[in-house]
Image 1 (tube, one colour):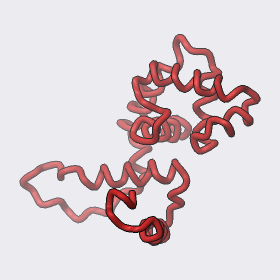
Image 2 (cartoon, one colour):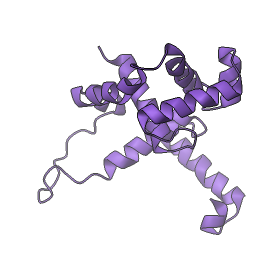
Image 3 (cartoon, helix red, strand yellow):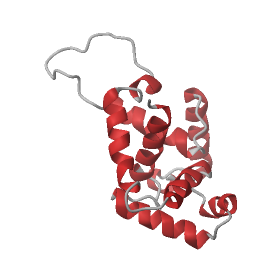
Image 4 (cartoon, one colour):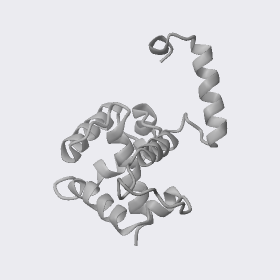
Length: 154
């Protein structure tokens, strides 16, 4: 990022530290980065009526937005391809992988399997979900949100 912005790595680190402190998030945690990405995406959406001025309603929390019927329906639909045709180990691997901060070696140690098996399970999940998971970004963020929603849904 420093090279892209043509500033020093120390300056980038200082800015990220200030942003992290201001937001009250631990940006090293993938789940926090996923939540920040979601919040930024939501704030970039146009108002419901493009010509109307948005009413000054209280800003909903991420938890309340992820508890809506639409979010629950989306999470179940997103995770549904993992259920038929896969054994439970792919699902367990994905959960452990998220808990391990997407570190395949830590996931392997936690589950008592090889890192190669973890990567194979990730490739299988990528095929079923039609998302890239092994590179940080939207696919991984969607998986994090889907698990979060599904865990709290009735």
